[in-house]
Image (cartoon, rainbow, N blue to C red):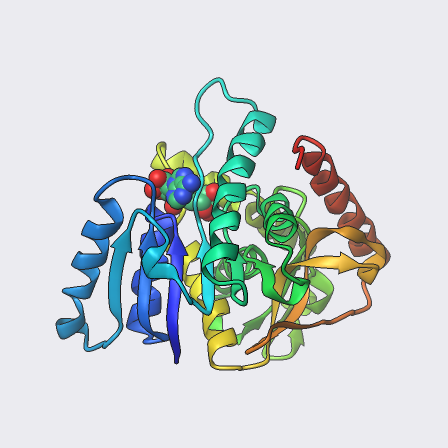
Length: 309
Ligand code: APR
C-alpha cells in the first residue's frame, strides 16, 4: 500500500478512478484535484462516506490546489476538456496540452519522485508533454491506453466466441486512436490461436470495432466519453505498480529505438512494477502488424507537431 495517490481531474474518469483505487485500498489516502471549486471536495467526501459500507480504509479528499497532494508517490492525470463543436482536433490538442503542462508543473513541485500515469487525450501526445515538462525519466511517465483498448478487444472476442473473458489473452499496441494495432497473431483463447476459432471476416469486424471502441460509446452518450472501462484500466496499472506485480501490459511508453521508433510515446508491451516502467518487451511482429505500427506511430508524430513546448 502507498501512502498517497493523487488523481488530477475529478471528472468522470478521474472520480471513478479515485473510487476504484480507494476500494482496492492501494493507498492510505487518495487525493482528488480539480480546478472546479467544490467538485473534488464534494466527490471526495462522498467517496469517503462509502468507506464504512464498502469496507475500505482509504481516506479520499478533494482539493483545488496541490497542498494535500504533496508527497504523493503516484499521480493519475485525467485533466482535460472534451472536444467542443467547431473545435478542430489540433485546437483540442493544444488546449489539453496547456492543461497537462500546468498539471505537470504542479506534479513536479508537489512530488519530484512520483510515478505519473497519464490518461488525458490525445494520450500519446499528453504523455510526451508530461515527460518534457516534469523532466521525469521514462520509467516514471507511463500512458494508459493499451489496457483499455485490449479490454475492449477481449470483451468483443469473448462475446463472439461465447467464452469466459478471462480466457482471452491479447494485446493492442500502437497509438491510442483509430490506427491502434490489435495483435491478432498473438491473440489466444486459453493458449489456442484465435484464428483457429474465428473466421477472418469476424476477426476483422472485431478489430474494426475495437479501433472505434471509444467513438461507439461517445455515440451513445452524446455528451461525454467512456469512463468505466478507462478508470478500470488506469486502476489496473496502478495496482501492478503499487503491488510490484511485474505485470506485462500494453502501455504507452517513451521509445528510444524499440520497434524502430524513437523520440515519441507509443503503445508497446511493458513490464510494470514498483519502479514504474521496468522493461519494454520487444516481440516479433508479422510484416502487416509492423507496418500498421509504423502507420500508427506516424499519426502520433503528426499530432505532436500541433504542440509547441
Ligand atoms: N487541473 C485540474 N483539473 C482540470 C484542469 C486543470 N488544469 N483542467 C480541466 N480539469 C478538469 C475539469 O474541470 C474536469 O472536471 O478535468 C476534468 C475532466 O473531466 P471530464 O470532462 O468529465 O472528462 P473525462 O471523461 O473524465 O475525461 C478526462 O480522460 O479518457 C480521457 O479523453 C478523456 O482527456 C479526457 C480525460
